[in-house]
Image (tube, rainbow, N blue to C red; front, side, top):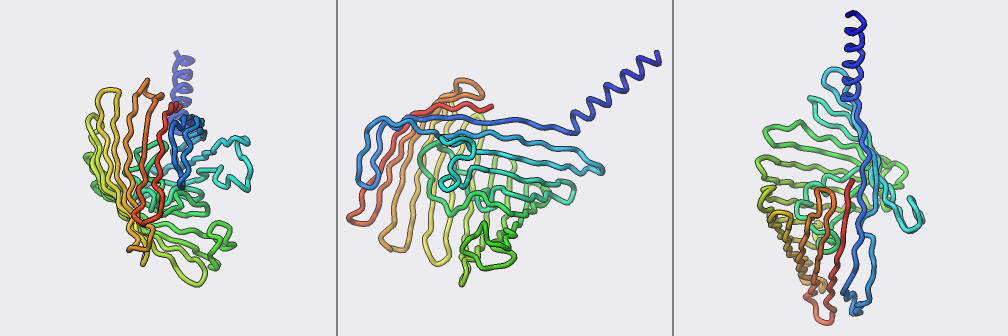
Length: 313
């Protein structure tokens, strides 16, 4: 009886450790065939196989004392030249590399991660290969320290800074400390999302300021619809409207984008349609098309149509 009790105690301890320290390997692979394309006035209707997604990573967490939790994530792009590829051509091979702590105080994250600006403005990022390629990026940055508050009935606020004293991340900056910083606010509850962000970047003799946000609603069984907005201070504005409709294993998508640069000869409209069929929970295929319509005289329209397949693990 004593041996049985000891064995059960050991087993319970092992199970407890397994739940307290979890690591997951994950990844995605997707390829698409470009069946029609026109870019900068040149039509390219020859078949072309593109790698849409090729990445893998690990993420994990560990439960600490007093309700504190540590977490981490490493994620890498796989290029045609290998995992890291040609460093001169593929400086974004490492997508994520961060460590964080989470507790009653909120979440603190250190390392390469998504910007709060991206989190606030990407609700309508629904398409695989087309549409919404315009963005006041970068989407991810290294040397970032970020704080997000605890959830307050769906509301959170956050702030982050790029601590880049040697200017290796923000290369145009001459700051010896904080090269960029941002603040954001979010609401996520009952299918509703709303996010707004402000970002400031030191670029030497001046500071660039960006504003953006998105708002929308998603019913996981029926539809998703949202509005987005981004603006560079004293420069261009970008608006987008997009939606999805779910019918069993089928997803139908549509989107519209408009860039307004106060008549400086580079305003444009963009339209996109897409269809996705889920072969399983982790594998799906799609067809997408986009049409780019510049407003300025003498500029050529562009379009792109792709068919693809993706597997996530």
